Image (cartoon, rainbow, N blue to C red; front, top):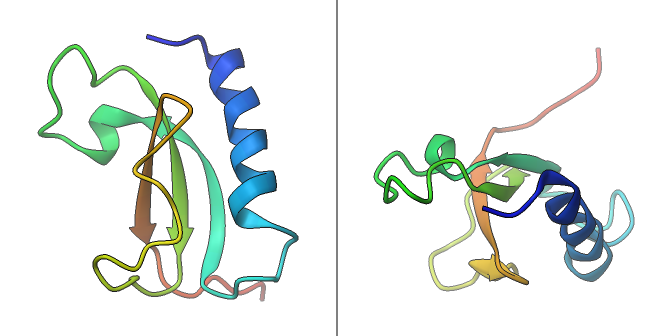
Amino acid sequence: MRALADVLTEKKAFEAEYIGKPGTNPNIMGWGISKVGIMDPTAQDEQKDDYCIIVLLRVAIPEGQSPFPAEYKGVKVFMKVVGEIKLQ
């Protein structure tokens, strides 16, 4: 398992490469760090406590058209549809 500090460093590089400036992709509602076991309950036991990058989406991306890799510099990447997030 990689240290959280290392994964945070990879997350910043991922942001620079794939997320861009805020507002450039209206489908991206947010991004952060999670645990593989939360994102994939069927993951192997030795992977469940690993950290991963999560990208929160407004709508689903059609299969095979994701702009994000499944893994970035050894860190798994997951997408989750959360719908529209608006400030009130």
